[in-house]
Length: 158
Image (cartoon, rainbow, N blue to C red):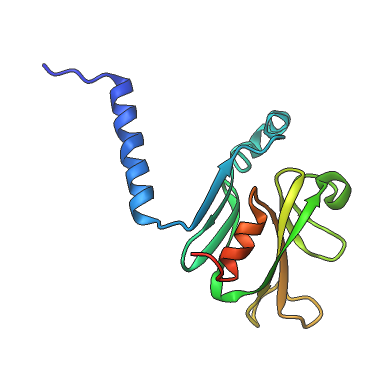
């Protein structure tokens, strides 16, 4: 009989998954990393898988940012404005890391201290997140190349 090693099967599955991801998605920008505070999640084990990986991906039509199982996906046509904020301290500015709201009801995906993109997005009329009749929402999210992300989202870079 023919015997295939367990490692060989794992490697083949990984290669197929990678090929599938690269052929079905034409990302204009992508970054992915483990949040620096991930080891602390061992203390609250049930939420560990939710925050396992942080990623930002931009395609022709969508911007996706957030954690493994808790993320936001925004249509690029709904983005009204983007700007770079050079430095954010998660603890001082947002009261911690993870998915946060600040005192201005801006939603933050704060994975680490550092540069962030601050983005205003139009919301539909039937959205529960509409505050004071305002149909926009502000998102703030970390990325390693905030200026480049803003440039792509503003249509200045292909």
